[in-house]
Image (cartoon, rainbow, N blue to C red):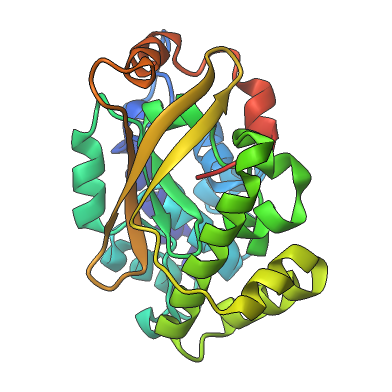
Length: 288
């Protein structure tokens, strides 16, 4: 393991990212050109002390999970991610195993241009990879969790708090949509252990999921009409659109409302409100 090179690489990647690239406020008196160490740690779901030790060339060898989280937080390209794993003397995740820890450049480029529309990039298992400030204001930031719980579908069927994003009367619809979408993803991925484990766990933990899964309904979610519960603006009616990556492993989601509608007016207000007073919402396991 090349600790000095790993430390230098992490610092240079951190320096190049602006706070607004990852949905963080710039704030006054910023003394570094990019993100602060504690901000990288927060985005990666790591402790600030742990990340600081890594960037100082000290500390324990990071796990593959920690490296993947850092690759996402620092928005590394595939080559940069592979380099990070090489420096840490860890096996490089192969694309055949569906490593989807970072937004694909094409989707990320589009997201960067959606400055007035809530939008985010997610995996086909509904794990949020990156979102703009509008999406954070609309639906909150993803919880800092690891493993299967990174998936909003997983949280939807295992954590009641995850459903607070939608009115209760809409829950059956979203359950059906999530399961039929996951059916399509599971078939496309083939013998993928990640999907198989998730499905097995959800069938065991959720009677609702098991019933819907047994129905074998299949439909990738390309567009959907949503009613989103916002803590300050109330219920916002929006259309959610999806643009799939070429390999189908990632999606760019964006939210719109027809001009002149109440939803359009609420989106305008949302751009003013931003992410203020969103702490309680972020603590809830909500996504998508």
